[in-house]
Length: 504
Ligand code: FRU
Image: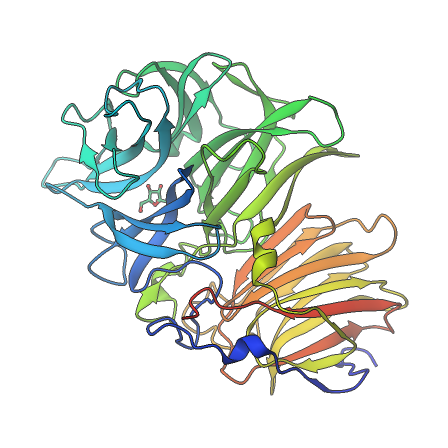
């Protein structure tokens, strides 16, 4: 029956043991993510300084220590042994002398190139934008700065010679630094937001920087370019072949009108990035509205696949999210890979392998299932059959639901959150996010992560990611197979609860 929810199979009530364990105080509010990082309280935006060092993953993040709106930007700090369980530490880099600490990255200085490391050991060096707000007739100023830590990131010293890079510009920000094997120096990629350009700089010691090259404008230019990233990935199944990905945030001008991110596939010779594709082509890293300023981890163990995580939000409504006492959260850490496709080399994303450790038993589900947790993974393989549209209604109850589905006519996978619960806090929130997806063998593959207030879809083999926030009512616990315009073909699906990382 066209347009109607089809309930096939038996109503299955799922009670899982994990639901019983107590959640730490302060981490059990209605919308509080249970396996995604959010600060205990107050505002966060971009992830910063992601790095692995001496057995710990470090997540720094844009943070207002004094409230749940943007302001007093500082680097908050959390550490994890496994990318999933985070322990929040005191603020790493506070706003000081009226200079805010904007987005940046952290490197491990293995050979003391900076001269900051003591005791013949590697140390951590953070590279960030210092933002001095405008005052009187003086416009705002953004410069690049460094700070170092000799105690595994617990305490930081700002370099007295800061700034290390100053073009006297109001908009010049978000340095991502990495060690370039090819040119045997540190390389920084940093944004000139209004020019839709990134600039590359090189340095022997993280203190003196020389301009190397520029890239842009290219791709999407409907807003400021922010949060650039440059990293190398192997091309799967192509021997030792690699490509470099230049990822650039865009605000506004993303696919959904607000914040979004694009990537360029190309080569990097240690000095210059060259795009493999025409400048007019835009490739999106995520087709939802809520993945911005994603950053990869520096200094991962050689055997670890590259991992990226982003801020799960959009500047259009970030300040209005109905959460308290925190505002803002991160996406799941995502494992990245490259594949040769008919259209060219493309980036693939999947949740980091470490998520497996949090998953409960996989339970096969048929048509309609009641869950007792709003933190779960749904995996489905479905043949559209005779249906025009197939998919799932998630977090459903009494007219409230989020649809994750596929439209045959347009060959697109989508998330529709127009009826997902609270959507009234911003006119830009109700939305459908849609992405082209081929079904090479006629099977729609979906991996959907739900965590109280978010839906992250990895479709196909991970060639499409769609990340969208949702704010359903407490009782929205139903999962329903959904079709429109005919009956679905074969459907296989499993549900796994995902345990809270805030369990005591
Ligand atoms: C992106 C951004 C960055 C900036 C930071 C400030 O979300 O605007 O360009 O460094 O946020 O908080």
